Length: 257
Image: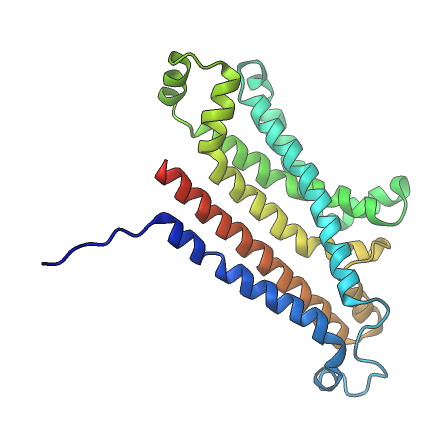
């Protein structure tokens, strides 16, 4: 007799954290080993006087990159999710098209143009790139928040109200938990895109992993460009796989409840 074994959702969720760990280890290894790979990058630029970017430590550049993207992500998530919640309530439904259009405007302007407009007002440094990342990353979060909240069945909300829940309790205990996977997908898209976009901050004095790329373009040194691009790619893969693992865990919890 064959017996079927039930696979616990948590076991699959735990396996999902292996890939982020692998990418994270590769990222850390690349940061630590990069200064010692001169012979490898010399193959790319045999005639260059220097092939390893040494104006700043790669670990410092990584930390600054994470700080810029993290600050922009926190602000963007707060603004995007709160805006999505506000326009899906009865009092705010009239503003739903306006919020959608305002969020779309951020992506109609290229980040370079946003930086060019922000620098005269905000000055050089980190602040202009944070503003650019906020505008550029707002649309996926707003759209997914709207899609997630609007996708919650009206019958479920009515049943929750019939049980005696207040509108706030329905939002907090029913709508947001059910919409969470869709909202998280928007946050994942926003943050992953902004990890690459943040490299443009190096053009306005915001030191990050874009520094080697810009220096390589200016000096015609492909080795610098590859070093910055490789670290940004590994960072994006690490963060994206972390979001994916968390989404799997979230789905497992929702399916088990």
